[in-house]
Length: 71
Image (cartoon, rainbow, N blue to C red; front, side):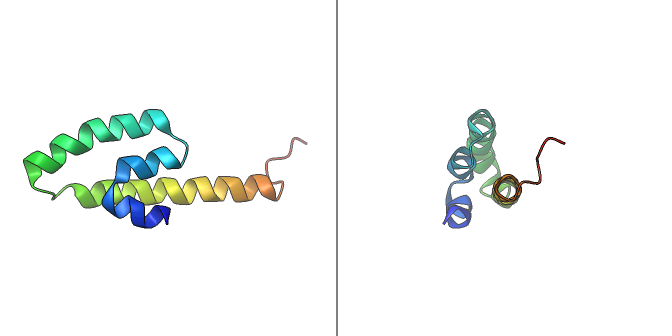
């Protein structure tokens, strides 16, 4: 579901992955980029959101299976 949200509202999707500061920065860049470029930069923000979603899922998966154990 977060991937679909990334298509429509990338800053909100980034916020839901647990990166609030980055989502505010992306929002401040995203709004003028959408207005001035007519939506041509929107795919760049979608790709950024998808990468962050994938990374957060991999981190949670690694924590679940103990790959970040202190040795």
